[in-house]
View 1 (spheres, rainbow, N blue to C red):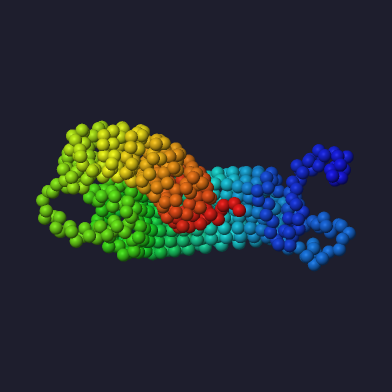
View 2 (tube, helix red, strand yellow; view 1 turned 30 degrees about the vertical axis):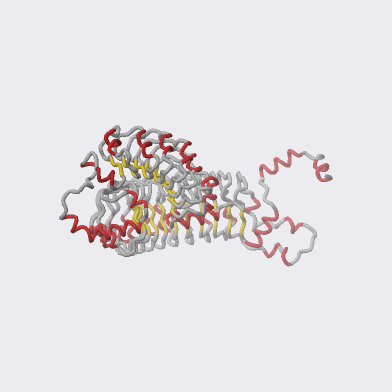
Amino acid sequence: MSRFRKAGKVDSLAGFRTEKTEPAVPSGLLRGARKSGQLNLSGRGLAEVPQSVYRLNVDTPEEAQQNVSFGASDRWWEQTDLTKLLLSSNLLTQLSEDIRLLPALTTLDLHDNQLSSLPSAVGELQELQQLRLSHNKLTTLPVEVCTLKNLRSLTIQQNLLESLPDELEQLQNLTELDVSSNHLKGLPSGLGGLTCLQKLNLCDNKLSCLPDSMAQLKNVKMLDCSQNELTDIPASLSGMLALEQLYLRHNKLCRIPPLPAPALKELYAGNNQIEQLESEQLTCLAAISLLELRDNKIKTLPEQITLLNKLTRLDLTNNDITTLPASISLLPNLKVLLLEGNPLRGIRRDLLTKGTNELLKYLRGRIIEEPKIENEGDTAMTLPSQASISVHNIKTLKSLVYSEKQAGAIPDELFDAAADQSITTVNFSKNLLTAIPPRMVEFHSSLADVNLSFNKLTCCSPDICKLPQLTHIDLRNNQLADLPSEMKHLLKLRSIILSYNRFKSFPEVLYQISSLETVLIANNQVGGVDPSRLKNLVHLSTLDLSNNDLLNIPPELGLCSSLRCLSLEGNPFRTPRAAIVAKGTDAVLEYLRSRIPT
């Protein structure tokens, strides 16, 4: 208490004024920095960098003025030059020219501040190897940065850059360059001079073309051009011989670029305007193991798809594919084939939900059966679009089908024909229904599978909850924004598809359906999920949240141990990074768990 009484005798405001002009850095941190050569001041609310930091290796430390003896560990004169300075997540608006007083720096981390410019003195840090400037307000990159001959990593994502200096090519030792999430409309022609570059991230800018000089980047393994305005990829990029991962998502491409990149293993070209796959394009992808073409306008797959012998994952979600070549089942390494959201004919929907193995097994069987089918005449199994009522479907398959009719209501004759039958499957997809047909309740004791996709449903009637045997419901491509709370009584529901609707939040009732195994809610406007409640869904193995409005992925989602397939692509979150998301569910969950505060 004596310390506080003594403090009362002085001007306490003067102390505060001192702190304002010279932000305090604990002396213990400074002492430790002199020994280790590293100083971490991240997340301390600093509006400016204290002079004591800049002059760390210049001024004689305070303890040297005191009349004390020094042990071996306290010999201030044996200090180490500062090599690593972390100033991230503060409130810095500027950096002093005094940064030149730390010429031994190899790492300078300034990310997540309010910097609108950098001092020219940065160019004097000739030992610098890592410069992190992301999440600031930089409008230009000073030319002095281009004189840092030893720089290996330069990250400037999430700034306000509209151009990059032509002198950038002077960074001959640069191996990583990240300029994503800026306002770049073009790239300097000298970009090809960065011959040591291995990772180049150009994502989320306003690029309409790429310079031919990029062909000189013969060591680049990862190139991300997602979320730009590219209409084509120059053929000259085929000179990037080391390229292994190419991201082209969310552009305006009408075709896959014919790039004979011999090392290319992963190509992400989702959310473009690709309408067809040409044999010329496919023959260039001899080494490809992952091919993502989701959310395009592809109508058919050529037989040449069988040339991709190393393909392990093929994502064709949300295209316009109506038929699937049976020969695709002959791809020797294919483990994952995603076809959700395609108007496929001739393949039962329930077969798609059983997974890739069952689908490929079915297609292999069809290769043998096709010659027999060609010689057969019309059978009772007529396509829904060719007959009004199929007695065979009703009595033998226990299926009620009225699909692709563009009908605003289901005729009573159909329900009458199925009276007294134990109907298990209903398919009323691709019509103009604005409400769930109330007569479906007549099959409450047997109905397990309902397909109401591609209609105009604006709300889901509580009547659906009168189907206690329901295990699967497909409501994709409607106009739904919510689900009735009564759905919690569907104790057998295992799978629900809600993609392409108008959900702005994860439906509350889904947290209460403990039997759920699959939830597909892609292409909505969902802004968040509650991992603590999601964790209660102990059977949930597949969760598709791709193409929503998730700004933040809570680390606790990593504790949802039952998840085997988690899709997060196409959301505007910063972390986890796209490279981690691309590695698959296990890598994402592991990353999220590592971010949980301990």
